[in-house]
Every structure is written in C-alpha cells, then in structure tokens.
Image (cartoon, rainbow, N blue to C red; front, side):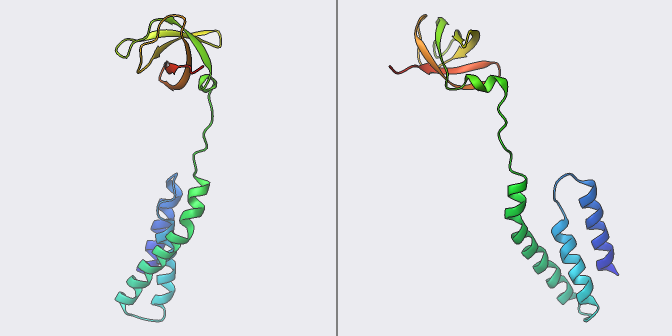
Length: 137
C-alpha cells in the first residue's frame, strides 16, 4: 500500500513540475509494489526501490540530456560576432570607445588600445557593448 501511495505521489510531482524530477523514483516505487506482493521484507523492498531508481536514472539520463539540450538560437545582434568594423572613438583597456560594424555604431571595449580608424573584429557581445580586438591583416 505504501509503495502505491509513493508511486502516486511521485507521478503527481512529475506532472506538476516542468522538469523530469521524480519519474525514476516512480519506476522504483511501482517495481517495489510488485515485489511487496511476494515478500514482506521491507529491506528487500527498499533495496529494490533504490536499485530500480538508480538503473532507470542511468538508462534514461543520456536520452533526457539529448531532449533537454539547449540549442543555441542566434539573435539579431549575434550576427555581429566575427564581423569587421572600424574604431570611431578611441578605446583603451580602461575606457570604452565606439566602433562602427555593419553600418551601426556600438559601444565597445578591448584589452588593447585602439585608435580611431583602426580595423577591428568583434569577438563577442556583452550586454549592449561589443568586445573587440584589432584586426590582423
């Protein structure tokens, strides 16, 4: 009876949560419910519960990982990464400057000093500013 209630509890928790949280324990509880029909030993039932829960977790983890993989969805601003541009306001490691990339003026930072007119490449975007480096020619 306890295993049946635990099974229902785990399934209920699984239904109300967005992520897979208790499905493995529900599997262990249902198998332990069947085991309890053949033995009165609580120790054996608990051991079966633990083993089945762990096995079901290990077997389904790769599948769940693939299903939940966060696929990178580029945004409009991501198109600037890797693009070339020009410095329009001097940039120093301690002071932001401005760059023009694809016809748009952006605030930019860099680990090196870049003078007006220097060619740059966008390494990444941090909030609303570009992280740039001097373009190798």
